[in-house]
Length: 208
Length: 83
Image (cartoon, rainbow over all chains, first blue to last red):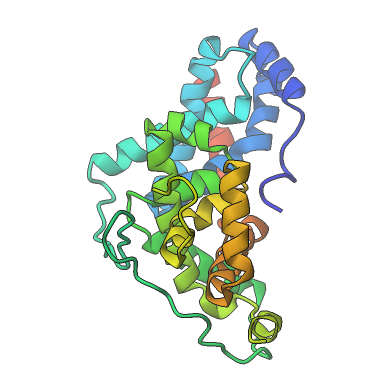
């Protein structure tokens, strides 16, 4: 479970950050060990590139170390450092180092325009089984296929488990924009991942 | 946007399916969406697949941190500290 297993007590983080501020490199190393994985994952999802993600990871922790004085104990360290990582990743993309062309397929109109209705279940064989690796690759491809507008919102909300408010603040968006982009991202991903969704039981339940 | 006691349509439901999955809505709206869901198998599928999509990403960890990337990060920090 990516959203909970690596979340230590916030109090410990604050204590470590306080020690690190006072020059304890061991305390900072512990923070690195706790959050490098998640920072790398956010960076990789946003940049869609392993090398850029590594660069973002390094820049993030170097900046975090030099800016520890700005970290206030009333915030979660994870939220604080992810904000640094997101800014680094977005900046890297804006500089054009990782410019990508993505299709905005399945654009959804939510006001008075027609919403594309996705028909339920072109079911594949329930017996179909895919390895964890294959699934992970498919999930990665699915996230990578999202446009730059939707991808950061989805990653922060549904991969990293941040709240709508935290995501909005981090990306400098309104709450409504976060919700709207999250809806579109989820619907696009659902369409792409339909073959992984177990639907044999559901079909029986619904067709009564 | 829905107002008053306007009947929930499938389009309304789809606009709110994401918030519904998150449970992030006023109780009154939630109750009305649930009433629609009870009578609309298509929207039930929309809801169920959206919920499963979110869960799949929460349960499968993409991009594990390679050990060499972690090692290079620590080497960079050490270099910075020793300057």
